[in-house]
Length: 238
Image 1 (cartoon, rainbow, N blue to C red):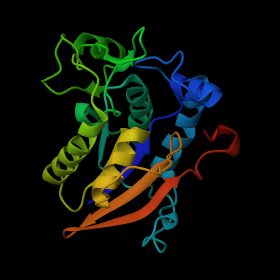
Image 2: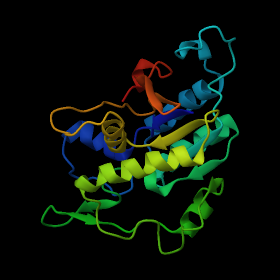
Image 3: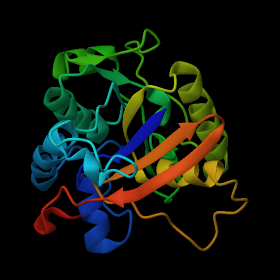
């Protein structure tokens, strides 16, 4: 089984962080920027028609085969859904919501005392009206997909373990899965896969719309490449 972990395209919060390196003015559930929507054109084209010889162990395959993705998932955060819709249209694959692959912390913002407080997420009607192509699980109701406190940072590794287990239960060795997800969760997943006991002092960088490939083979994990961005023009790297 092959997993392509794809970070969402640039969001409004990404721009704010780049400008201020603080959480000032952040949104709990930001949309993509105009530049982020430009990134989607190149991402979709590459996933559909990219030369598989650029992939490790596939150098002898003919051009034009693309990456052969068979399943496509996204988190329910708006920036991931918007990215996923573009990829879904490019690949002509259904986009399936996987609520558990959300960013670390879930939906939250700062209160007046700069403490993180949970923010209610949109419900089923919101997604059905704005993103009718998105396949929603039955658990998503009008109460909103997120209606709890901000996730504790220490709880993220347990969720990452649950996600990996769920991936292996859902798919067999011939599947090629693309996840549209987030940079913080990406770091937690890699730490779990690499059995790293601490998160101090390092960070696995993942650019917007970048791709990481992880293969699962006979109980072994192969990290084939990280943070691949050659499908993006230099001016669109964020």
